[in-house]
Image 1 (cartoon, rainbow, N blue to C red):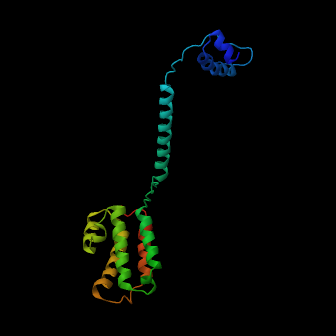
Image 2 (cartoon, rainbow, N blue to C red):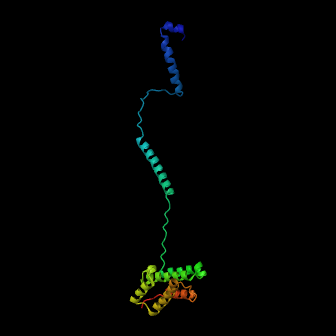
Image 3 (tube, helix red, strand yellow):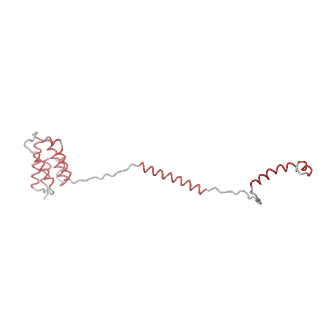
Length: 199
């Protein structure tokens, strides 16, 4: 139908021109042989709040686990040191071994040797048998304690001999030439190795 025929039939030109593109567009969107009989209105889809909340919770949980792992990595390891408790006898014997390995023993410095022997004996008698006051007690104080105790007679005699010999070197200024340090050490070792001092 051309323009002349449209004018003769009275069909307005603008209506054909306006509807022609819509018809072409709608026919181009449909497959061949299909027609649209009804068009439904747009459906409102609700926002997936539960899914969003679960995703946010998962993200927070992952960050929290990463933070815990970081804290675990950065926490210093606390090592519990086991305290070794040795018997008074073992401590005294170790002190004797240290004395024998020291330069004091090697050079026979009698004053220092006698001081060390006396201290070892006083500490051992206090810690093992509660006799005296330890290293701070004097020889006279230890003798007074021994006199009031039930100590065996031979033990008391050996302690007295050892401490008097050591006091002679410490307080008189003698070089201890007439005192054998090996004998003093043997006496102390014998006293410490003896299990029972008291009767």
